[in-house]
Image (cartoon, rainbow, N blue to C red):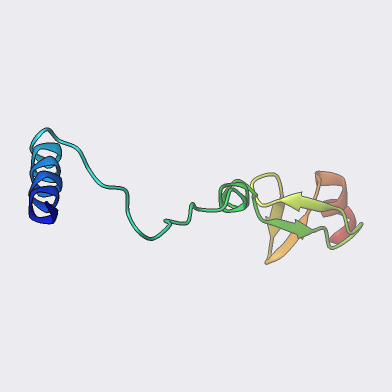
Length: 78
């Protein structure tokens, strides 16, 4: 009786695998945190030497290694 049950279960597993079925993994796979995606979209900022306003590197005016937020601050700082 027990032998028939073991053979039936084994046959069921073989048929399940042949039809493309998969068994769920025993360990849980941790998903990546969503905060990683957010941190990739933040652009670096620098503060203006004259007024202290923070500007992104793409919007900043960099002159002689110093960061300025606008043309007016550049004229004041030079």
